Length: 385
Image (tube, rainbow, N blue to C red; front, side):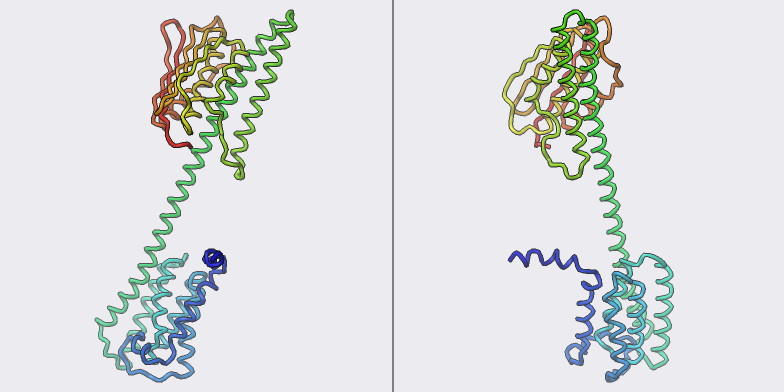
């Protein structure tokens, strides 16, 4: 049973010539002088039939065997099959192998890469020459009969051309989808790098600035330096997680810390000298997927901005878990006398707004009357990403 399931995959691993050979042999075997099959043979020109001879075997071989290379060398296949078909009809063997011409035309319409127009012109001229030769031999087919047969052959070529265009359009669509997916993944990773680097580096800069004024207090200086070291280790860990995403063999584990990791983020921000009040309401729903990751990033970016522009000012973080959404609000009082951290590019808030909007939520970041600012986000809980 297992062998039968894997048989199609094994068959597809064979060379294309080997896979096309059975059809060629099947049509060749169908040319045996069986009365039932002879009644269904391909006849053009309506000439009296002739018994098989050595040349009939050559014609059948030319019509059937080239089908084995109809996908690998479609042009050569079409030429040989057309030659065999011409011998078949001029000699009036009227074999079943004549059907190979339609198959060769269909395959050429699909797989022929170069000189397609030349092939059409030369093939049409060869057909006219064949029709003239059959007419001189006493064919009673008439112009209408020859034209009908030509249209049937043109239909086979047209079907192949349509399949070719459909495959090309599908390949182009898949390529564009793959490029869009890669661009989206690069943008997502860039956003994650921005969040990780700006938060950790800002915290380290603030802590380092504070350490300059603690030389007279060794205990506090040691605590601050330990906090800087701990922040650096966190940064390295997060960067390794993101860099692992660039490895095609990485597993599909969690890519960002969940909302449950917020206490550690709050503690790290407090170590950098930012007074933070943190409250949570409700219980986390399982699973929350992208909503949880987005909520974490909103809090992280807001705390980073608080360290940059309002170091030392009171910051309040409120997270509420609902049945259908996560609500986040981070408010910071008026800024301190100077910015303790490096300036920002504004990319973080713009990226968060886009991220939350894509999840169907709402995001806002605005100033307050006391020169403080508040960040709010409402993120619906959907399927895990």
